Image (cartoon, rainbow, N blue to C red; front, side):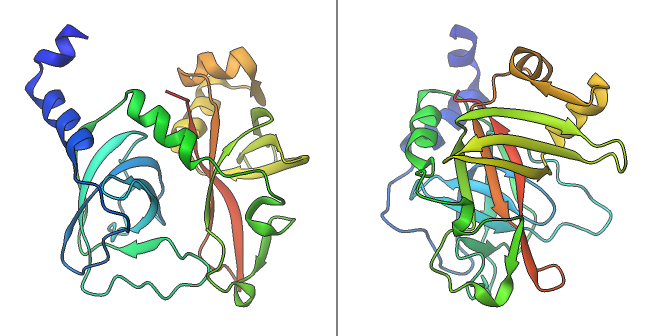
Length: 239
């Protein structure tokens, strides 16, 4: 801890996270700088805690076609909102578009993150995203439900690897349901590849990941042949 306090870069990140002025609503002003704490990132979407409003926001980032996102859990990042932030997607009401690639400033872990995750966890009030099954037609969404859910699992989570196609899946219990989601968390996928196991759970999963997974970050995809699909884009510790 003493080393952390002496490190100028770490002190700057700590100050940014803890001293950012609070506002009740997410900043939606085109061209403005925004700061976020990464919860999960894929090339399609990056989910962050907006440092100003302390709300969950999805960033659409213009990654080059041949580039894989290098943003990781609890990275602190700076982005610039696009001239058109594209807030008209009724299936993803939290999403905004950035004008350029974000800048990674460092990483942050601490009691404040634990508090945020506890506050942002989704209540167990029915099926995930309001519907059962892996997907729903795009035309059924009305912008009334979130497209991100931070789940504190009742059972699990468990990672499974399918031998037929090599895909990685997350299984967990929540609100009385046995939920299976395609895993898009790069760290979890690498963990399964390294372990060379078909299933990891409990202490074995915690050892392989390097932390005990408490939360499952779930998101709805952009439409694929007219349907939006549920997936896991992050496994997170309680911190």
